[in-house]
Structure formats: structure tokens, C-alpha cells
Length: 279
Image (tube, rainbow, N blue to C red; front, side, top):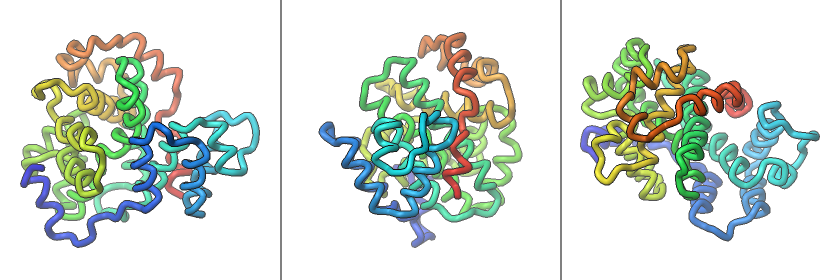
């Protein structure tokens, strides 16, 4: 991990603690034999998490055909991947304190949008099963390093956000001010939290994916997903934002922009679940 990123962990004994349920859910990504009932059982051990997951499962975004009243009911209605993603989102959003200079709802809306775009991109680009399974979680986590940066340098982070009007510009603005990016700090956090090595590397490589050898598809997906989330936040047209921010990357990926635009339009609000996630 870079020294510039690691410095955000020196002053704060308050390294965010990953909730126990989240830690166990994370381990389940490496277990091909894990089933719906095991994931549901983990979630049910935490009553607050259970309540959040049920609120999320009953939102129109997931189009439940009936009122979902138990976690196992949610498991059957949503499937393992979606249930686990919702539970991780609820866990992680609760693991960080409110930070000066960052609006909590806006921050997590952006993170959830990045997560949903990452999942869409992974499927479109034919990523392997492991990458597709973790794309949502990686997208959700991508910007969390910025929360640690804001604990240390709230005014600098606020300055970055003031100037980050162009989709994708946050990376270079942070590099100039901090000598590292939010993705670098997230990579350090993920390493401290014992995330899978592949995901730690993806965060580390997300700033400049075209410079990485061998090429990392998940790092590229994360970078593109953040540009899309920026565009959504600023109400910019997504395909235009990509053409301006990352033309070489979308060409390298052979990304079908017409199909992507159709999928984004069909999906609706990319952060529809965030209100239930935060309360």
C-alpha cells in the first residue's frame, strides 16, 4: 500500500470496525457451497441489519410480488447475490461516522450508484463469475477511503468536492492535493479489513487502469462506474460523460455505449435503495 494512503490510518485509532456480520458475509464470497439459508441465518443474527434488509427488499426497486416479512423470504425473492449485496451495503454504510464536509446521503447515493453501475458493466463486459459477484461490493466500497481522508483533512476534501464538477475528475484532484486518491485509501482500508487480495488490488489500480499490466478488468469497471455515478449525480448524459472523461478506456474495453445507455435508462434510479439503507 502507498505511504501517502497509509498516513490516513496513523492518527486515527478509530479505524472503522467492520461489523462481524459483514466480515462473515465477505468470507462467503470465497465459498462456492454457501447457500441462501446460510446467508439468511447470518443476517438474522443482527436485528438492526434484518430490519434494514427487509425494508430494502420491500422497495419498488426490487419489485417484490408480495410483502416480504422474513429474511429467508427475502432470500428466495431476491436471490443470494442481491441479498448478500444489500446486507453488505447496510452493514458498511453503518460502519462509518458522519463526516464534516461530506453530506452522508449524497455520499452513499453516489456509492450505491457506483455499485449498481459496476454490476451492470461486469455483466456487459463478460467478466468471470467471481468478478461479477464482487462488482457491486467493490463499487460500493470504492469511495469509502474518502471518508478517512475527510476525517484527517476535511477542508481539503470539501475543496475537492467543490471542484469535482466534471465526471471522473475526483481522482486527479485528489492526486494533486493528497498525493493519492480515495481508491488508494480504500485499498489500504480493504487490506486492513482482510478483503480478498484481488479486490484490494482492484482498488489500488482503479485510478489509472490503462497503466496497469496485466490489464485489470475489475479496476477498469470501477473507474468507469465512478464516472457514471458522477454523471448521474450532476444530471449529465452518461454516454457523453464517458466519451469526455475516459475515451481511451471505453475504446480499450470495446464498450457498447448504445447498449449501456439502454441498460442505464431501463434500470431507472441507480441509487433507489439508499434511503432505506441509511435509516
